[in-house]
Image (cartoon, rainbow, N blue to C red):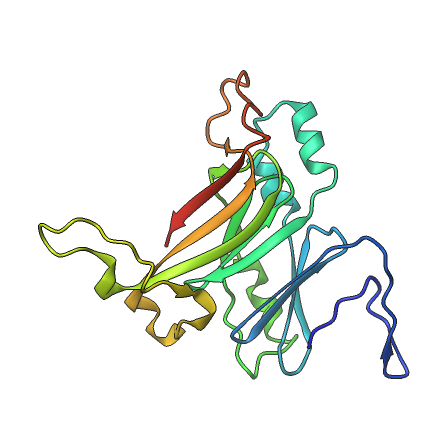
Amino acid sequence: MWLGTEDGRHVNGRVFVSLANAEIVIYSRDQRVWITVNASPVIHLYHPTSYEHLLELDISLPVTKMLSAYDEIIKQHKLACLRVSSICVEKNLLWIGTSAGVVLNLPLPNITSASSTEVVPNIIGKINIIGMPHGHFGYVRFLTSICATSSKDSPAQGEPSTSYSDSYKPSGSQDLSNADQYSAVIISGGDGYEDFGNVTSMDTAGRDDSTNHLLMWRV
């Protein structure tokens, strides 16, 4: 069991937990445990068996780049309390939802049972965090994924498309050794919709910010 606390202190084998209003996001997959705590824009990577802190990623810069074309007031509002709001892993990509509505992803670093703090920092400079052109006006409330085997992915010639309801299963249950045998859809839920690639006119900015939206990416 992984337990996140505001200060992370362990005293005499006991963990003291405050009732402070703080949010903790923990996501475990393969040889990686991703954690972000206390309304932070920083994601920490821990080894699941040695419990070593391997690296940390700050999303502030890529989010700021995505908002560079926006009005200064809107930009300040979105960046004022920037934090990671959700995390999801699929097809060897780490997807990150933010309080600014920006959805990010990056290729996962190669972590093995032998990885340590001496090895992992060498890959930090190679990590490229990418901002998605489509996102939410407000918080990204959740990120999840569904997947289907390739045999179910396309209908037979002349047949209509069918639902994947019988073949979809949570991404965590897929055998990643067969990663090429299935396609996946990443789903984000959040406040409003925002096209970060088209900000030439701010007349409609925030028009649907009170309407919940689901966005989907096929990977």
